[in-house]
Amino acid sequence: MTPALMHERGTDWLCRAGLRPTRQRVALAALLVGDGHDRHVTAESLFAAARDGEEPVSLATVYNTLRAFCDAGLMREITVDGSKSYFDTNTSNHPHFYWEDSAEIVDAPADDLMIAKLPDAPEGAEIAKVDVVIRLRRKS
Image 1 (cartoon, rainbow, N blue to C red):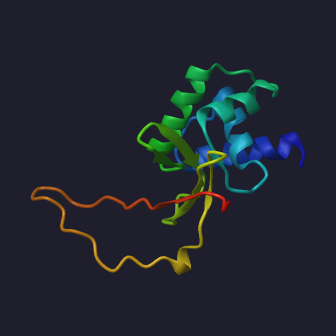
Image 2 (cartoon, helix red, strand yellow):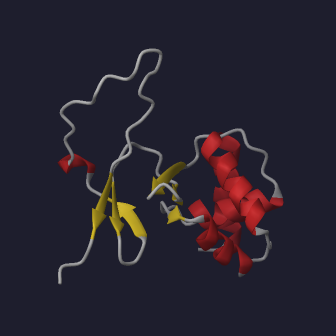
């Protein structure tokens, strides 16, 4: 995959969401969707990938950009253990497997998940989404 094509895909992704394609946003978008595959990243892993690229960005810029991508509906944030955040370019409703030993998150098959009933939301609230994270550990 050529860098030019990856940047073009990243730019298109941003423009479809109404985000201005700045150099740094395009560089990060190219890393996230430039090859046409969905990604699960942390801010730190995206920062490490960007550090090796042609458009250096600070870790603060990566965090701010990921937040803007989530706010624009381009990504979903998945929080594990209340503190570790992963960002997913696949925004459809789907569950995730979380490998405890490697701290890796991957998509789980949605067809096999059945949630029969959710509790009613408290008065004055509505359920916005349901995140399902299935924690895995390797058998001994």
